[in-house]
Length: 144
Image 1: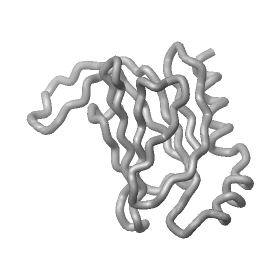
Image 2: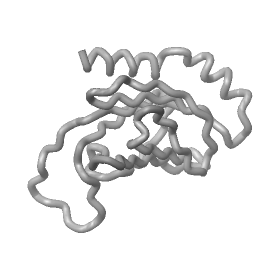
Image 3: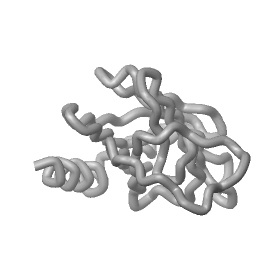
């Protein structure tokens, strides 16, 4: 059942209403862009949202009833540098599947998927030769 929900949300996010997203994007200012995203956390209802953000500035994505989760998107001012997404879970430890609370990534025109784990973020220091396996607690799909 959960995989069906994830697949459905990803399809809606990545394929659904892409024409209307492009049409609305034309009416935005030069530095503005629309973000469409889906957050699917284990045991919670999927959340589909769309939001206006500005290039080069932090954009906190609205999470609705999942207020204990904060997601910040920073889109670069030009297409030569990578964009960044950050996650912070207030009531429990979480990170992306890279073990960090932020990820740099390239073009999101076709959509990106991020796996959220129950791992506390690691900062600097040493990488262990043996890494513990952490549970996947959610997925974030994003497109702009």
